[in-house]
Length: 158
View 1 (cartoon, rainbow, N blue to C red):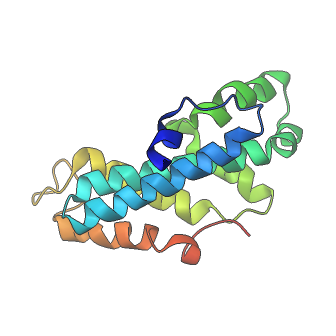
View 2: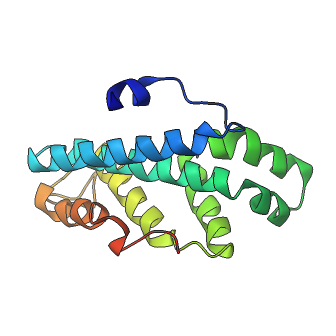
């Protein structure tokens, strides 16, 4: 049943079901991250943890969309929030969007920084010489996966 719900196309961001769908996606991705971590698939776990955080941010951005639109200065920025930020949460804009959510009182900076570290690890993996990655071993990144998967104990909203 959960698989069927997650595999459905996302509702439009303007609909009531969008936030719930993104939260369900976040929980599902986080559970997969834990499973992959237990199986020793650290890069896959990192990717799933990143996707979980991104889905959580999407839900929070949609929940706070009206307040976020009041923060920005131009109509172009307001349109971008509606059409791109909430729907896609671009990786390159996650810090900016996080800063905006922090302005509204949500403590999401730690989670976003951790998610971006996991994203980096997913793509570059461990490298003993540190030529292509800042992680020398798989175990070096496990602490990030474990910290992320503790849930709201290290990061989250008020």
